[in-house]
Length: 375
Image 1 (cartoon, helix red, strand yellow):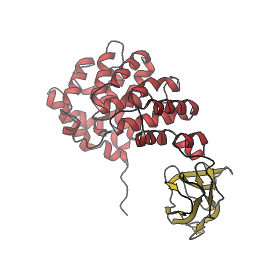
Image 2: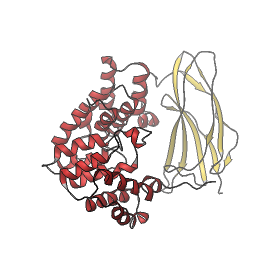
Image 3: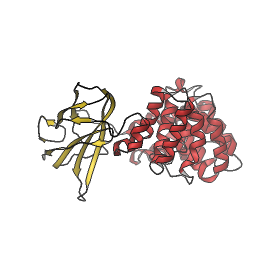
Image 4: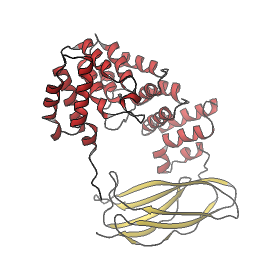
């Protein structure tokens, strides 16, 4: 098996630091690209990703012959004419350009340069998503930054519109928390909820999911209002609601299922779960099956629930989606899967006793036990 290369090694490495140097030197001959590369690479190998980004921005600051708006102008001119010309093949961008927006938040986060700095982040976000640097501006200049974010919701570039939602997410992963009420972003989401681009709508759903962690009723009311207004219909609404309410669906919260059209008390029965094997190891496949029957035609939303006992003696659960379907009277709906049983960054498969259950429209049905053996 080929060893996985850590993200930090592909995100910012010697080749990419050299490319930054070449691109900056091309628009500013006074920039000593060789010295920049040498100084940054002296530290880079021992640093983790966030520190590599910071160190590269420090190197730019130390070697650019000017500071302030003049330095910002050089960085902006050093960018290829479009993200596509830079080699960006996804919506998120290239880590190659993460030091550029970090430079803006570190060295131009002042009242004097605020408008220029925020405009630069909107430009740079197409090369590498700039939500983390924006959060530093929110901490120091909340009102002015929120005004810029409101304008971004109407930008012609979908990546800038997505930045408006992502930058103010209450629980943005790997990011500092912002001192704003969880609901502060709702006016922004109002502008973006029916955006033409999936990348933007996905951010709206994730943002709502963050709010739902503390204010589920507020999110439910917001989704209901959007649905009743006709702005979101059909699969577009279902996608947004499913993702926004993802954790609440896993928890079996009846109102989350109801807004998606799944009745918590749907008259259904489920045959006992059958396991192909009851003794497995990390990396094996958990094969299971059951049959669902209903007395009336009813939509069903089925989850898999795997439960284990954690080191603290309390149960820990991994809940994942199995299928959505319409159950019809007199017809068995087969529920089966070859489920990979393997450790992930968020779920470790350790030796011990486990159980498997199915959750239908939020209702947990009887579980079946299995054992994970030591490898």
